[in-house]
Image (cartoon, rainbow, N blue to C red; front, side, top):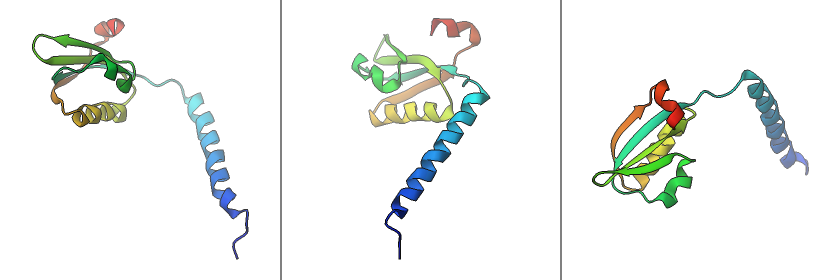
Length: 105
């Protein structure tokens, strides 16, 4: 027979584990971000800027949109690329920015 409170054991244990991991990773240090410039073919309206977590957007000659900003890790970068794919935009280039250009981002 299943105890009537057993449905709360797993969520409570998961919550405790989440708190322990959060404390442990907070003490490890800060995340080092890498700045990227992503160029896509097509015009991406500025209303999509929130979808890309504060990356700067501007347009170049021709139908080219450039996204520039700091990305915390490769998983986040892949997430941005998937969003661009979902919008039907063709990828032109993805380039990490040199440290000298990071201040401008």
